[in-house]
Length: 112
Length: 113
Image 1 (cartoon, each protein chain N blue to C red):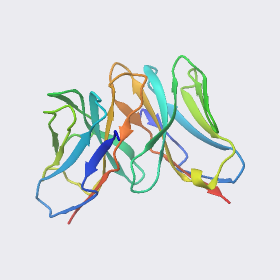
Image 2: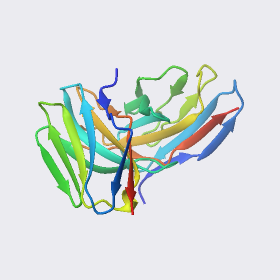
Image 3: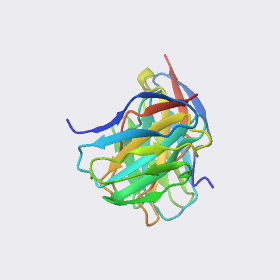
Image 4: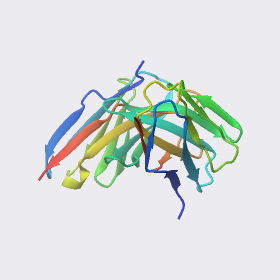
């Protein structure tokens, strides 16, 4: 049972435009949500996070939105740059454990 | 510099052999994790440990074993019982609290022939 889902395996965006990556979850007990960026053959690097008590968190070009009623979060990258091309994973933690549960990832390609 | 180190980066083994992947962290983190990445499957949790001498099974623990004898070390053994061991293995650590991120190593690519 996939508790964290990323339904879009890939996304292509023009340089300078907005990239929107989406993530859905099923467990309402998750307390904390994170986004990671990953290049091939490397470990994921932390990008941005949001607590379940907030609905928005911003860090430079990256903004994460959380809609608890819809069990949905999204990552906005504005403006998108070619160096943003990577696989993005959303993750969730909580529900009485310290396990990070990851989605299947979305491959973002930013076209120059 | 603080960080999490996995070794080796590439590992080849013959079918039927056990192999141990190393993971060391000097971040003084309490919690450590092992994930496996396969194409199209995301990161799946194998085992995790919240404190020394304690660990719990993740979603795909069958065919794997771990130990946590020291805070900084969390080795993963891939046994011959693991049906599809060829994969990219990632180790991570965190403070073991809800509102913190996990830090990942660079991964080990295991190929069983």
